[in-house]
Image (cartoon, rainbow, N blue to C red; front, side):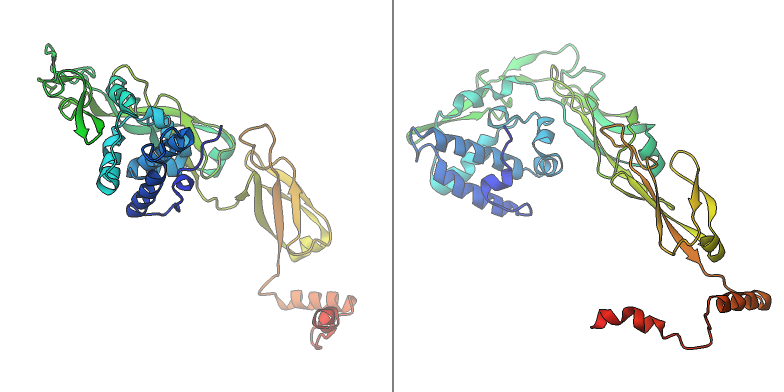
Length: 377
């Protein structure tokens, strides 16, 4: 089932500020809070949807990913809906609702919240913008790209500890990963700030990675760009994002294609458009011209009497469709060039030609008035 847009859930526009997001969330949370709607499952679901939307849109990084890639992009962040949060969002919710409405979350989400620290976080997705030529976009190409991404520390191999050392039980939460507070009739469980919900602490962190378990590394990757990509095409390369927590999957790499402007061709969808100049005499008498296409040159027959701006079509000489074997067409517009700097002899020949057509260039031509008079009446 298609998920509802987060902006629609909160009833805000895509350019809303953080304060507007908070204000909208407070109103929705007050309306659907379980304490105000006891036993109402629909209200509870609405409250969860509101909380999910808020947790994404209030976070600048998650909001940016959502705006660019939608719900699919957030999956790469380990975000799978309200039951799949990877960060302790409830503390932020309690600050807003508790401070403004004097609400507590009680035990409604306590079990899920307590389990949060037990799941390793999937690696972050990466997004890379990459430029190719029109020929490369049309025919496909393999490119080498350079990445700076997080990898497991080569010293501690992701354990975050100094080799040979061990973790100790967190004394703040006694190994539970949670601390509990009483607020009136409600009990609030929070992730232990000392161990971040893991129940254990590292007393001797790895010096190479400063206890993070990860370091930035340069990586070169050969990427195959398929034929038919266009501006804005997103290519997903599975497992080429950053490394996650130990035991979790890597993120993915999203490559966003930009196609350079071509000097001869213009592209619209899978069709190509170009313009070629021919002389007045060739347009009048007809000719054949050799023109370039994306793959090889083609011979185009120009019939006698071709008019300026007339367009010819070469079927299947455009761009291959990204998702099929069909190709677009090539459209060639003819620009008839009027000769300049004629010699006296050439002028005399043209006058003789005009006389043969009954034309006299030295007499005012009133035929235009007759051709366009219907436009004004």
